[in-house]
Image (cartoon, rainbow, N blue to C red; front, side, top):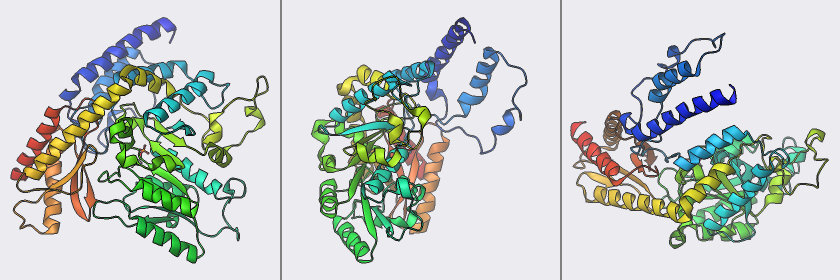
Length: 474
Ligand SMILES: Cc1ncc(COP(=O)(O)O)c(C=O)c1O
C-alpha cells in the first residue's frame, strides 16, 4: 500500500470511525447472536490473492462492526467501562503509524522519554508525592504481576536468579488480599510460581472492605507456621462492589511487618485526580506500588495501565536481563530501557495517546466528567433506595451501584437469584443498555457501572425504566 493509496484508504477509515461513533446507538449494546455463530461467516482459509481495501471495508461494515459488543455505546453499563475518547483514538492511529517499540531508549527515544513525562503528569495529578516513578503496561493484571514480582525480589529471595523449587532456604511465600480482591492477584501468584495457595484471602466487613485486624492475625498465624509473608494487596474500588480497603491501617501493618504494599485501584484510582475526593486513597502514598488503569475510567482506548512505584530498582532486579544484542554501544548509558522492568521485551508506545488525551481534556476536563459520573450513580442509587421492591446491596462510594429486586419479600433466596438473573437478561436483550452481575454475600447482584464517556443521565434513567419493566414482566 503506497502512501497515496494509504491516504485514500485512511480517509475512508476515518469516515467509518466517525460514522460509527456518531451512530453507535443504532446497535444493540450486546449483539443478539449465539456463541459460534460468527466463525462460519468467514472463509476457512486466508485468501490466496490479495483483495481491495473496498472489499475489506465492506466486509468490516457487514461482519465486524455489527457483531461487536459496543463498549463505545453510552448504554454500556456493565463490568467497568472502557471507552475510547476521540483524542485517545487519534493517539492510537498515530501510534500505529509511527510503529515505535520503546523496549530500549534507542528503539524509541521519544517513546521512552514521553512515557516518563506522562507517568509523572499522572503521578502529580493523582496527588502522589515526588519519589514515585513508574511505567505503562497493558493491563492491571500485568501491573499487579510486576508489582508482586518486585515484592518477591525485595524479600531477598532472588527468585529471578535462583527460582523457587527445591530451595530449603525458601519457606512457603504468602501474599494477602481481601476476599473481594480481583482475580488478577491470584493469577499473579499462579504465574509467579507462588501458587494459588500463597494468596491468603482476608475476610471483609459489612461493607466488603478488608478487615485490618483479620489481616494482622493472618500474618501472625503464617509467621508462626514458618511461612514467609511478602506482600499485601489493598484494593480501593473492588470489582464487585467498589469497596474501599482501609489503606492507611493496612499501610501501618505493612510497615510494621516489613511487607510490600500494593494498592489495586485499577478502576477507582481515576477519582484521585479530584483533590477533594482523595479520602478513600488516604495512606496510599505509603504503599510500594499502585495500579490505576487509564483504560478504565480515564477514557483511554484499551490498553493502558499505569503502574506507579517507589521501588523501581526492585522491579528492575526482578526483570532485568540484557543479552549482547540489546546492549547500547554508541551512546551514553540510557536513563532507562523500559524492558528491564517488565516480563516482555517489545512494548507499545502507550504514552502518545495519553499525552494527547491529557492535553485535550486537561485535568479539569477529566475531573468534570468523573464528577458527572459520580453524580449519576448517586441519583440512580437514590432511586433504588426509594423504590419499593428493590434493595441496594452495597455502599456507592464511586460510580457503581449494586442492587437487586426483592419484590414483596416473600421469595426465598434461590428464587430471588433466578428472578434477578432473568430481569438482567431481559434488560440486556433490549439492546438499549448492558448490565453485568456479581455475587455479594452469596446473593445474585445486578451491577450498574457508570464510566462510559458518552453515558448521559437519560441513559441511566432508561436503564432504571427497563429494569422496573422487566421486574413486572419476568
Ligand atoms: C480492581 C481491579 N483490578 C484489576 C482488574 C483487572 O484489570 P485488567 O483487565 O486491566 O487486567 C480489574 C478489572 O476490572 C479490577 O476491577
